[in-house]
Image 1: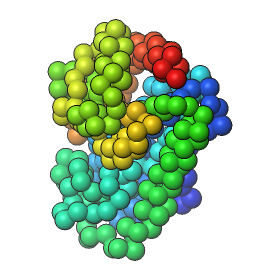
Image 2: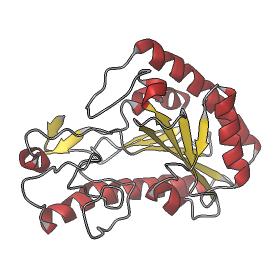
Image 3: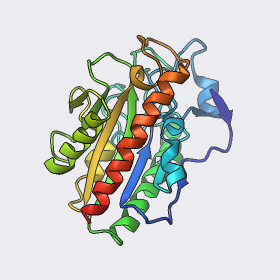
Image 4: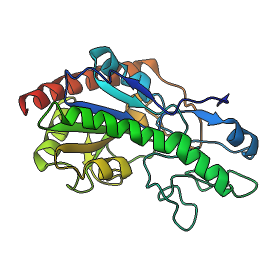
Length: 265
């Protein structure tokens, strides 16, 4: 893990390039921890189940000039893909600040204070959302239809290579969801829809705008990191051949998707 005192809440690529009506968000690949968190974590805790290496995997989007927003902060600091309030309990599926890992293991010896929670929200959560809101607003001024893709990955075996999440058709049109599935399947990926991942707060919140087609794409670790089972681990080792093959297919997927999006304007 990376320990720093002055962490940037996001990195934006090509905010002023409006060649494409697309904004890409990568919210769960960050690994940076605040000093406060580093000092209060239990010594043996493993922060697993991150969206490992997605900025590297999708680096071609930046090379092409696509507008990309990346979160460098660990989801375990605060999760921008959850609602901005805490529910009763500490389940990571419903709260933006976790106190247990995604495996249900405790993270801290003592509960976090309200001061810490509010500071994390102000510095990282709010900043990420403000940046994303601005990026989408600028696209909306220039395009009749704006596309928002939230990119994630997962370690469990679901029998699929990728899962398209649209909140069961609530965050984008059926036509756009079908386009995503068709173009991914064209590259040989086995696709599921909305099970077990229907999309999180980001797609649900920003996809409520009628001018925005929002979808989440979850990619299996086995598809792009290595053809093996993944458990309770951090920074899983990449198989270069698997990674390169996946990247090649994803490049073709996005190339065709961008063409479709421009045609629909």
